[in-house]
Image (cartoon, rainbow, N blue to C red):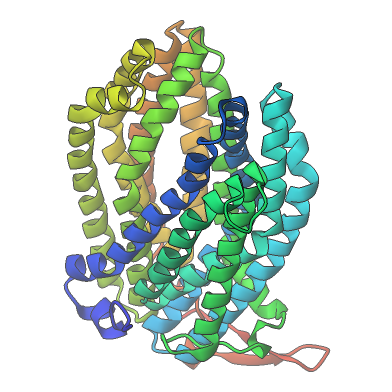
Length: 486
């Protein structure tokens, strides 16, 4: 399979066309990831009535715990994305290969650490989220098995990230497609005990998931070792290298703080919604509506990574005007797409809620209220995403970190609490606070884009390299600014 776009096309081709060539496989991968998570819930929901309620609830509370514990480490992949894309833009493939290998190596280390941390601490976190022993028990079984497979998850995710940075988004999509389909097929055999398998219920769902993650990790490594799709690494390349680790960690640390802070913020927001007088109705309406909105973000997720890749290539090739055009074009494109998707969702909201939960008129009514208030704000999320993609592609992740933390902790959480409780508006107030937070976050993002210098690259300038030898005799490359004043 050929790459989706060559280096020359990424640097010189029509921006919108190249952006979609890079983005459409990412969009499909994002949708597949959503289906990956839904498959477990779907099949567990078909267990006998005496088991399915606690099992499904256990999976639901497991999700935020898993995301929270892995979010900090996951954010460091952005460091690898910036380095690989900029080295490719500078036509320095050997260094791009090295950056990809060290990103993968570091991801394996993080995967092992998160595996141990999750197995030990996830039961305590789950007990904080529910007082139902059966739900906590199901969640614990599921999360512990999922965390055992975390190194595979990190390898597959790092592979997809560095390949996208290189310019190939199709190959990771095909790997994702194969493993998602395998997971959907394998789930019922291991949950219900079909064929040669024992009946494992919730544990079966988790085991099926990590088997498929392991398959994805092996396929990813084989592709990288053979180098048939561009990037190539060897076992020796995966050995720890603190020089490269420091570079990746330095670039990715702000992104990791932002992602983990965001994940915790959503946990707190869920707790706020759970304290309104009509908590069960509000949480149900929010949960269903959030699923619809997340599906509408599938296209935005793909475009965001495409923007980061194109910005990294442009800056690596010293094409600042090209990088600017990519960011503004991509941001306007996402805003316009979300306007259209928001209108479409608003038109079909009553039908969607009635189809999803037809016997609960209170939830349908609350869902219509939530979508009516929140949908006008989702185009502004496109602006935030576009600006964050610019900084991530350039390797400067502190502004996105600030934007993420301010959006959740400075705006959404306090505004939702203020309108919901201080103003005694209940769930309507929370939805209003969420609406205002998205609009203000977009304004903040545009201020950052206009005032912060995101145009300088993070890779060293080839002609200005100085070689230094440390006390152990190993040599390091000391980056010197490519331009005065940077």
